[in-house]
Structure formats: structure tokens, C-alpha cells
View (tube, rainbow, N blue to C red):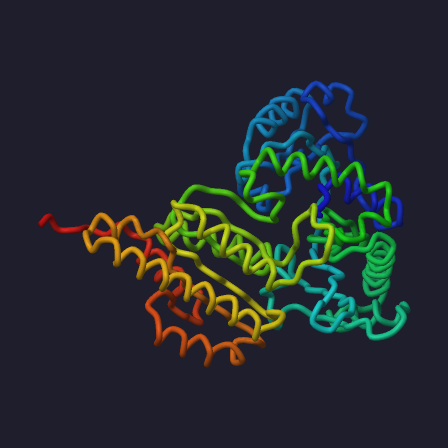
Length: 408
């Protein structure tokens, strides 16, 4: 369960992470009673990313400008989501920006501190630019200082950044988080640090231990149910209406794949992030549980012709992943055989709606899965295995193009 930025900033302020003066805006007229000085930055409060590119972040120098900007943002959908709230925040001029995060690494079962001297970066695909420190034992300030030193920081700046990382870790533990992120942490000319944007992902199965989160969880669940079809439940994903369904194991990789499909001339359909479980799940779910359910959801959508799987980095239970994909391909064979048994006309072939698979797995588990997937690919034309993402996107777009049948 993710929080909105204004909620994250409230948590940051309470625990001592520096944040700018800000005010929640529920209606454009609230700006007539603004308590912070101009110029300000107005930010759309939605769960979708890339607000600035979509026009959801605007600077205003006067009340008139702010009200006009707020009216525009309130009516601006981002990934199909309209904001119910805006955040008005003092404008801040930073000379340098960093990325900081604490994330739960499910592969090792330990928290990991992440830091990068570049902002606007995705921790899942940052590569060598991202520095990390695994918290192997009970946390101490040593871990935070070690991360700051790995980032090449020194003196007062090293102390300031490590202090922020310590407070991030405290919040991470207190609230049972899967992820806490500051992107960016800005540094001004005086060397003062400021969290300009933040993200928090709460472990959904820990909500019961935090009664103060129950109301937030219910509101998020109700809002998501209005945005998505009933069969999608409360998946962390995006619902579009194209021919290419997308399954990813991270928000960043999923959104990047969606953008690439669109740029290549394809039409994305439902996109699901398998990293997170259903918000309303009572019992724990594994990555493989979500993979099986995601494939079934997309296969049930008659508009989906191709399912593009983009798994980057660590994929839990790699052997079981292969089993699930194999079972899906076998069901494809049965569907095709059933269609051919009834009729061999072009119409019946066109109505055979079981989608093709295009699979891209890149990371530590790719070698484990590669041989099994290559063998499966030789046995069936229902899937294509590609290691390069651009090639995978191109293949998915090619397969989703309409087929022209000759008249007989």
C-alpha cells in the first residue's frame, strides 16, 4: 500500500526528516487562505508516477496564478487518475540532488540502504550508479555513514545525509515498510538538505498492527476499485484498453515497458506490477501466486493478444516461475487444438483469443531460467524468449498487429 506525497511528508516531519513548509489543498479556493509564502509549487496527489511530465506539477508566483493552476491540475488525469487533493509547497532551489531509499530485499530477508548521487533514478534499474549497504545485524549509525561514504560524501554533507538515512530506517521499522524513498534529497547553496519528494510502501500484511493505517487502507481500496474493473481487484497496476498486456516485477520497470510499447507503435492493455500483493489479501501471497493470477487475468481479457513479461533483477522461486509459464503454454496448446478441431476457417482462427507470450528476463536468475525457456520455446510457438527489452517490445508489437486473411 503506497501513501500519497502529502501523507509521506507528514511522516517525514514527525520523525525529523527535513521537509518544506506545505499545505494540503482540497479545493482551488483553499489557496486564498494559503499560509506559506510565494512562490509555491503545486503538486497533483496521485499514485501514478511522472507527474511533472504530465503537467501535474506547476509553479505559481501569485494567488491568481495558483488558483488557475490548481483548477487545471484538479482536472488533469494522470494514468487515468484524477487527484482528490493537491499539495502546495514552498519553492526550493537546490544545487545538488541525491536519491536515497531503504528497501526490503526479499531475496536475503534483510533491509538494504540505497543511495545515488543522481536523482530521478529507478532503484530497480540503476545498475552501478546505485550504492547499497545491507543491514546484516541490528541497525546502528555505522550503516548510514557507510552508505554516505560509498556515495563519495564528506564532512558536513556526509553527516547530514547519514542523519536522514538513520531517520528513514527508523520510520522503515516503526511502520513495517517495504520501501521508503526520497527522490530527490536536495542540497542548497548553504549545504542544507531537504526532502523534496518521498514515497512510502507499507507492507500490506502489517496493516493490522497499525490501527492508524486502517482508515487510509479502506480509502485507498475504495478509490482503486473505482479506477479498475472488478476482476482486477486492487492490483498495483494500470488499466488501459490495448492489445498488449504487461507483467512486471517493479513499478519502474512496468512503467518503462509501457512507455516503450507506446513509443514502438503498440497499444498497451492492462499492466500489472507483480512485486506487490492485493491490498485486501488476508493470507500472504508469493510472486508466483501473483504471476499465475496475472496471466489468468490477462488471458481472460478478450482484447489482449500478447502478454509481455519483463522481469528485471531478482525473480523469486525461478523454478516455479518456469512451471507456471509452462502450464500457461500447455493451456494455449489445448485452446488452439480445440479451435482447430471445431473449424479451420479464418474466422475461427481469428477468434482463438489465447494470447501469445513474449518473455524478457534479465538479471541474476536469467541463466537459471534460460535453458528451460529455450526448450519450451522450441516445443511451442506460443512464446518468444528475448533478453533485450527493446527486441522484446518490438516482437510484442509485431505479434499484436492485425492479421489480414485472404478471402476464399
